[in-house]
Image (tube, rainbow, N blue to C red; front, top):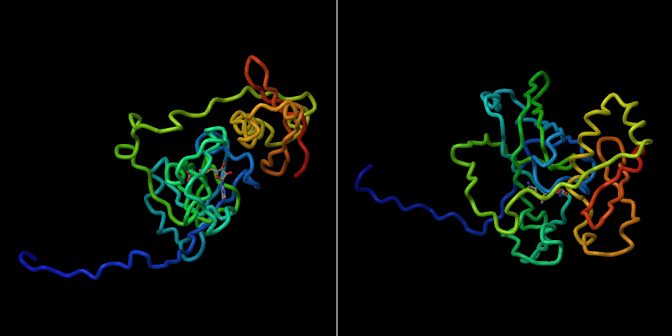
Length: 252
Ligand code: SAM
């Protein structure tokens, strides 16, 4: 309507609100330690997003199968609530330098909201709705708040500046002991698990402060939980660079 001025009621800028998760993640990562720090760094990481009632109506995902990638908005439910600080220490900066929380992808942030771009492999609507995903950086049980299809013509900006994280982190070479190779050979998912282990450990999942030189750390054995196993590994920080060796796999 031309010529009519409508007075809008201003939204309460600091109103409280609550949200209901639309579903949750079931992933290869039972524990948050070791999960790559962004999606896509471990393409072998598979996950399902299981929608909850009433969002599990197959009509709610009609047309989604035509998109290859999705944005997931989720809650960092394993991060403490209401315990954020204005400055955080990104692992990418060695865990020592600080940047503003809003200049980071830290899990410790107001509202604990996370955002991940994941690959959509399949949609199963036989019983409710289950989205099969790949490349997820989310721990199993993560509550998902929303799904949106990814639009590359507007959202892919390779020329963008990316601050302290201008490119993907370096990847370390990963080797396996003979006994670990033997264990993997007995598993029906041995090939995909091996791939997943390589992709996860190549990211050097040690806590950032362990990247600071220390003689003790070389002999230290770390563990990451992947699927149903605890993967034990050591990192050799030699003069030629670091490398990872998987020394054992035990039931988690
Ligand atoms: N891509 C997302 C983003 O930018 O919002 C997540 C980035 S965050 C740096 C990735 C880390 O979040 C993973 O390495 C994992 O340790 C942690 N994480 C994954 N799921 C989580 C959850 N539900 N609660 C708390 N931390 C989680």
